Image (tube, rainbow, N blue to C red; front, side):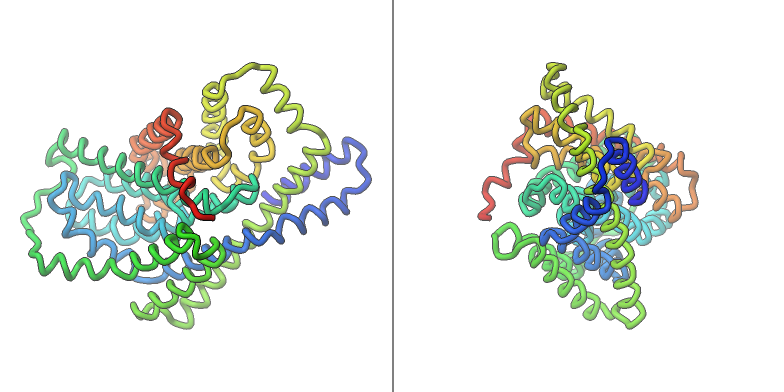
Length: 411
């Protein structure tokens, strides 16, 4: 992807007879990779890699199960809430789906839960890793759009909670309609003592979430500083749960380096493409074209939704963001759309793309976990695709769902 972006940039500059391609690439690469805000990216990735190798998913399942057994849908909600909680410390959609699915899918299958609903809730809820902060894709967008990453994080909180609620509401309604077809009858009841013991399993992860996100929202730490605290906290959790070995530590570092280098190269290529497009004049012409079309703000949003969903058939989420922001942001700015709001809108559309074939990345993750056909997994995830679409409609009608919390941020 990085080579493709760089190659397109070189071809574009050659077509306008620019003789300073090497100099422009060097300057562009330096400015793309030396921004201080970008340093949060590898730290949050490393935090997710460390937690990926702990018993966190098992603790989440055991900690949440007693409190959800009376709710229609019962342990299906564990899939949703576990993904939501893990998303708040991993920042990655794929890591969320893989980590939670590895624990919950076998357990739900063993207890007799409907296979399609178990897979569907995991596929849909796995996308929460993109939206609920600290989101890696929000960091990438914040750097590309030159907006506050901390405000983007805060803007993602209410839409993330809303999406969790919509997923749970769908499960409740489906369970009430289909009765015992989705959920087995369970006679087990939980005593107050058992619930208290289970609650203790959630304490480490909740403390980590409060420490990382709370420090950002209260203005105590920048996202980069909070990411460093997050890495330290995840290492402590690994030590407490006795999952931190020399081998697991080495694998977490190597995994973080691989992911960070991949994203860094894509960002370099995308930044160079943005520069090349600026020299060619494409953003300026697109902005002028949008102005000439007389599209309303709603009309532009509708067309962009269709555009990004189609792009999602062929590209992964981060590639979509870095490849299109240089083209799309001038249109968005021209239309007067708030860039913080647009970032959350963009992530929601990318979430839809994560569960659409043929390149829905979450589908591949769950296919690897279950051995099911990818189109079967996509069919299971389809109701949650529409739940995300409903969330997009809600933030379009009520933009304060996104913009309410950022206005209270101290810095």
